[in-house]
Image (cartoon, rainbow, N blue to C red; front, side):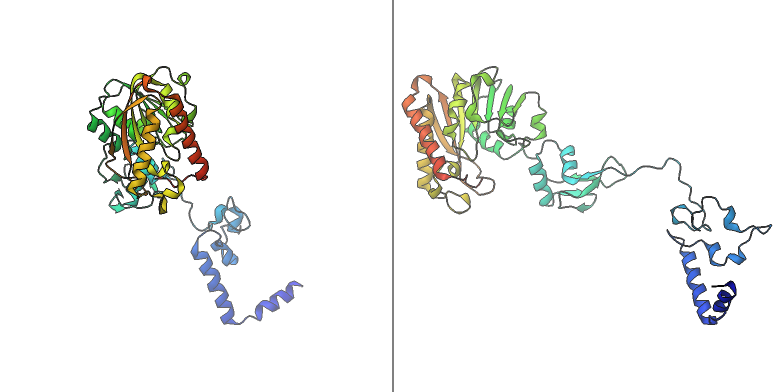
Length: 366
């Protein structure tokens, strides 16, 4: 189209249309945000520098009529402040709480958060994954309002009952914590004076940081107690504790006995929900029938005695299972190798293995 025709088309615009166009263009220029048109582009015939040179011809860094980053050429460049701080460091609330209170396990910390026991500044936060600013004195401080428990988990309270009930002295001893998990039994043994604790568990990454960092503790994770033998420890232990789930104590007592001194002691937490047959376990994995409790206690204690032990006594655990509310029992034994009955011990283990085969899938955890 010839230039003369363009001029004719331009003249056909009504005054109101032309005013609307100019108002829209002017509004775009005033926004000054990313992608806004440079003000001098709106009415270029009025934007000349002295000497007749067009102003955008001498504007450095222009690309396609815009400044780098989409900033309008009429707006001044914002200078980066000197010493500008980088992005603030953030981490999950539960992870930060574990740094603040390493004596707690992740499960305990997350329970505190869920119960509204953790504040960020003045605000109660109930989601463990909430990001919080760390290493910044000006940021809201994280506060744990929960009362500090005596042990890293509830299991410590159970073992404490046994030590107090039977007057078991563990000062200066070397101990084996079978089924260490979070470390409640280990924590109790250490607080009562144990010199060293070997902690064995088939799982991993469950142990509380406080226990893991303790120089008196030797952690043996991903280890099946059924395969435990004298070659796995540098010495025999003075006392062994048993706190297991999803497996009968009779299936591991042989390995535990192999590393226990001839005059050693044994404290076992007997959990009927993992010792009873499938038909004896009620809804939710709870054993409520006292007759089943009695049958389980008789069978397990008899099976352990057959491996060369003397039963001192049985007492009910001071607290029930964490989730299901199962009643559990503590049993105390003294090692008596001369009392071992190979035939009876083998029969007890065989019966326990038969129960596992009959049950098929493991029962719900406590």
